[in-house]
Figure 1 (cartoon, rainbow, N blue to C red):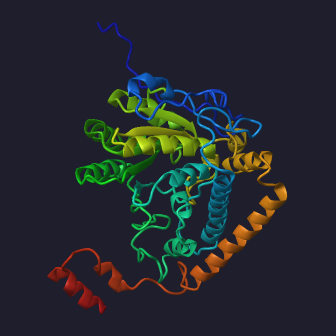
Figure 2 (cartoon, helix red, strand yellow):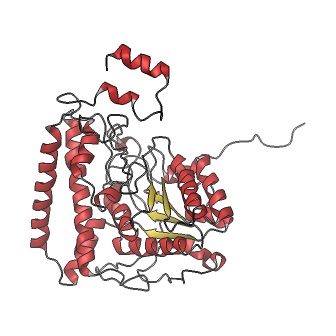
Length: 410
């Protein structure tokens, strides 16, 4: 007779379901300034604990404290604040445009603005990002045209990608923003490959790969860690842990690991966790990792602890899988408000100037939208030429495509 009990699977469950009281008691938050800043050339083995803590700079009073503080001037922080405010305003206008039928799809960055905006500031011209669909701050902080971003969202006659990509899947070679892929985690291994190529050419440019917490369950994520660690590629591997994949909480993808950053430890990669809603902390950690890559010291894995305030996309209703008030209970606050309060505490900003900046930024975004809409939207106005689908695929167009283009009359 079989004396063993029947086997069963363990399926992780979120702490709270819709209708329940939000609970973030499992998120252990150390005091701001309490996590040490290691030397750039530190032995990864000696900083294993940084994969389980959270690096923070801004305290509850809005002060910048600790060894990771003091890397940006007030003027640089004000610029960063405007970048985040611009991204948030851009999001609001494009979400409204989707609801009005001007585009088919949109994805917001609400609550995650500091991650991409601060990281971009730590990069140098020529560095390459392999992003996901929620890093538009890399473009905005890099000075990319809001009109061109909107043209891509509307898929109109001035769309830089000529209607070949879904809305928000941007691409800009000039700004080091590799084409966003809807197939998640593919860009992680591509970032490592690009970084390896840069090293083979004895170049000085580094790469950055981006995934969300859910995409860490993809095989490409692990393949990227293997190649990055084996060849010590000059790459920064970023995990944006916003607590939710499309509709599953982070515990599903994290598996038995204590943190996402901890996954890098088995590969000998220095791995850090940072408060993703703290602009100063994100910049400081990004600068540390980027400098490490540029000194040919190999890859770094960074987990940004943040929260997706809005829906996964305009196709999603988060009320079906999490409490409606959960974002209000998120313990790390709002990145825009935190940086604003820090600058006010330093006497470099004020509530009145913030209101004025909000109005100025809204005017700029609205003007950009009006210009973009003159070139067409999803259901009205100019569209990319049918001819464009035949271009840019082959160096020399093969006969079957020439025939098809002739049949299409373009």
